[in-house]
Length: 271
Image (cartoon, rainbow, N blue to C red; front, side):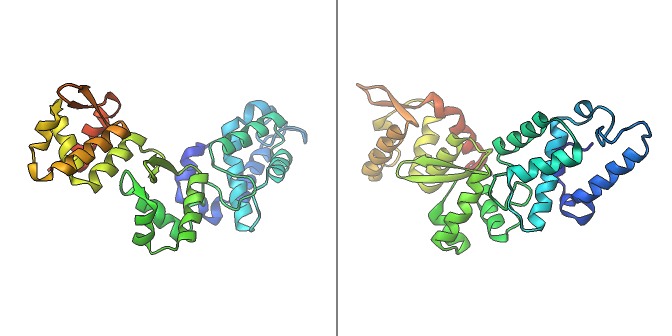
């Protein structure tokens, strides 16, 4: 049977020809070809525990969720369990494990119409997700203006994307960054700091070459002495840089942020 993950990636999963009834019809034909099977045996063969593994059941459950969504039904654990138990005749524990796996993976959320296969079918939510995915980090205020969304509408769609684990929320000072789930949190923080503060880029680019004293950093542009002091203090408080020599006030990028700073500078800000 086609793998569960690959099914979710195929656009054909949303077509009428790939509905749950098509799957059942195919399995029914398999049963009719096995004269030795009894009514109590699995529709896939004589030993249901061996014929159906948990991944297969997860695939079946996701197709049920598609059917529920088409009929405007909320996703509820009990109907999913009962229908799967009736149609597949597999052990209770396997179904419970499959449902638990989907919930833990945030592919389904009981009490919702949405699931991982249709969460991005809403145009506004899809645009919001794409806007967040375009860069390592975004903030709500800029997303609101970029997409011309009201505060409540933006908050609603952000919550849905967070609920299903498609994006993450990362604290940075008094604000929050939003990034797709695959982005490293430190990458998101460094990208945000550099993209919005040219002087941060100067400081971190200079420190990538090695430790520097405060005097050496300020002398890069003496006219912006006060601004350099501000950003050095800010970066130290966040934990991006640290003082390695208090007497000479020599700064270096912390080990936690050194590699990601190099990565972000090379990938997004290399001139």
